[in-house]
Image (cartoon, rainbow, N blue to C red; front, side, top):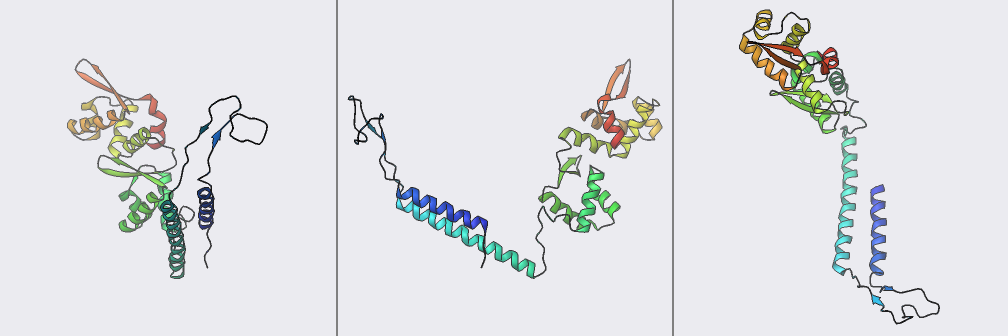
Amino acid sequence: MFTSTKLEKKLIFFLLFFLLTITAQATEYIVSPAPGDQAGASINGEKVVELEVTQIPYWQFLLWLAAMQILSIIDVLLCFAKLIFVVLGFKIVDKRNILDNPDRSSIYTYIRAKPGAYIGEIVEKTGLGRGRVRHHITILEVQNKIEVHEDGGKIRYFENNSTYDEEERKIISALQNVTNQRIISEIQNGKCNTNSALAHEIGVSRATISWYMRTLKEVELINEERKGKNIIYRVNPSYENLIEKYG
């Protein structure tokens, strides 16, 4: 025998609906208060308006009754299914026990500590197989424990606790790139602040530096200023705290 709070609520709703149906054909009047026993009678010749009578068709009552019965049966079947899973040794994952799995807990802990982490990085740091990591990440995402951010074709993961807005996720994702970190570091140190100087110091082509600069300017981590024929790059002071924390 299965009992359910939802089932009790449905039965209470059904009884209320039945009582309302029985009294639905009552006629209502708008009248002025008056002494005596003649309810609805005119006192000074004013017009008494009879409200429209609302009747609920009998078929609607039968439809609601059938719906309540079906929902009750589904509720019982779900309880029975859960019991079967428990007997067979399966565990139903929900928000209360989602982190009971040690592998899933370690993945979630790493994402919290390293916001913007991606699959390959998580696999390397946790020592788990790629397939297992994907499986647990899917569960964490379904249960709203983490959220996904796409960065240039690479999927990155963040803790879903409303700590990071969309702008911060973009900035943090950009700061996870090693070349971006090197460019920002060189500009902050004052060693290089032009395209050619950065290309020479980092050891890549000027076209490569230009490609990375487009990304950094899109998320507003880098500002640029033209001086003569040169473009001077500077770090946006508004994001220095984020750069210090995640760069």
